[in-house]
Image (cartoon, rainbow, N blue to C red; front, top):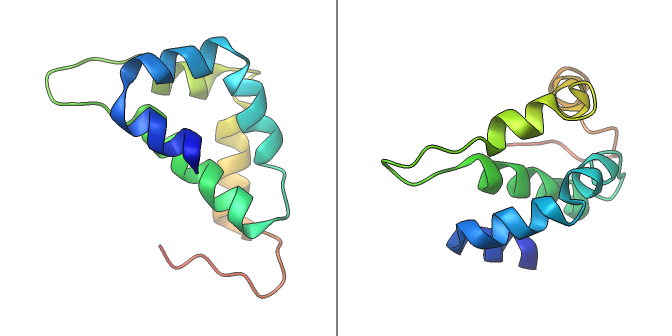
Amino acid sequence: MAIVNMCTYSEDIKAIFLRQSGLAIINELLESKDEDILLNNLRLIMTLITQKKSEFSHIGKTLAEDSDYKIIRRLIVLIKEGLGINFCILSK
């Protein structure tokens, strides 16, 4: 959650995170069966692709295209099949 908060307030932090193996971390955490980790990872993805008005960012495209679209494919599976965590239902 700390990374989510830092990335929310600074485009520089987003860039540093992505340069320091951030995409690999996101990919790894998308496979987590821990509800809190998975939900915070989804928040991190949203934070990374959100941009301020009048700014153009390639972060969303970078996330989507990395590792042969692995993040996009995993997100589609999560949407179609759910989280795979007992008693966990996404309400948002």
